[in-house]
Image (cartoon, rainbow, N blue to C red; front, side):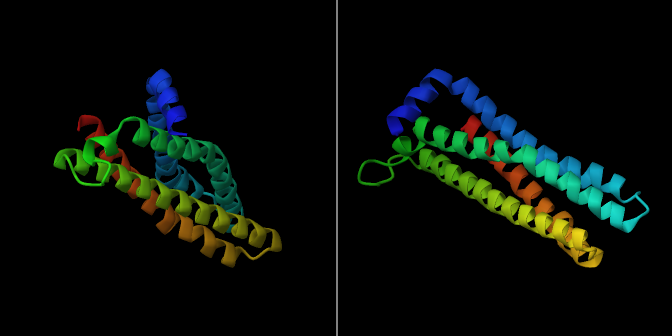
Length: 177
């Protein structure tokens, strides 16, 4: 598997890095647009039921759009972590640190990977809550649906935005390291 990653990255490094950055931009940017632009527009819809239906529909579309980018981001992150040789520059075959600066960068790689994985899990929770809210709306239980959707808008999306910004910043540190 490593050989395949080295070959792919050797031949397509620019494209892989581009897809990684594009995926982060689409994912984090989509959440920013939903939370700070679309959300305000939804609040102008007078009918509470119609507002909840529109929010649920918009979230469903956002999740469909970002899911392939989330997968692409994680795959390209693993490819870059392996192919760029951060581990080899940081530790020897016996796992002894051979370069402190390289070890810092190697640790940042792991921190970024954990952040993206937490964000992906959080996205899964959001998708589940949205689906449950949709079912509640079909049953006519707008109050329970609003509780599910509120968790997404008030907490889960802002958490992912914050984590995404941190991960992007760490990516800049890695690029400049």
